[in-house]
Length: 337
Image (spheres, rainbow, N blue to C red):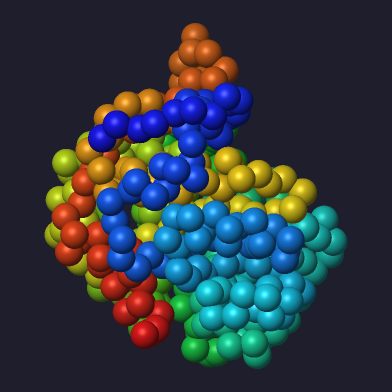
């Protein structure tokens, strides 16, 4: 696959000068695409997001939006957006944000018809609040509440291997990836009657064999492809293996971008770059530089330039598998027509 450039100004989100508007129309897939993992923080940001979504054929999304903005986003964009319950992260320093207020918000989301609850358990959460450990007493209480309200569970359980080797070198504080997965599996078994969605390929796209083992042993588990830079960097290292992984697990791997649309930090190129890179990864045989700068590369090799980016190697999923990843699995997961 050859890409066309032509944009005169470059940025960390478009280091190659790609004409994203034109290139969006050249991507091969023309079927339905639902994005099961975005963050629309407010209406103004959502307007630009859906402008980009239209260009890239994104028909519907599931958003982790603040409870106080759900109604206005829904009023503006209707059935194009569904919601996932999350705490009020902007109030992270206030007492009760991740305890009493969080429990009230789960009930508030449920009252608005929300049927997925997000449990963010990234290791860096330990720097924010003790309850953000996956198995903290408050978190377990929240899980039981969400379960009683008929919610599915979305989980962010781990971060890139590069982070465990750098940001999380203090293993006594942050733990090791295998320890986080062990806790996750214990809760998967405890709540075997709940559907779980493991964001970011369960935080382990570096090791598809481990993910396969998880899927084989836990039929209540789905995984999404969210976190563009991470997915491009790691899945491009083994595109053939990822293609086989998707084909082996039809209906269990769902499309997600992890796009964050916040009017305080948003641009057309930022949004477009994520959809261009993910769709190029999944649909094409492109083999070349990613247009998105990836600071993680310098974490492990400080000799690299500040604007370094990985090679993007397309997986080129077959049409049947693409249809399942882009729409079929998401529709089945959420019981949507």
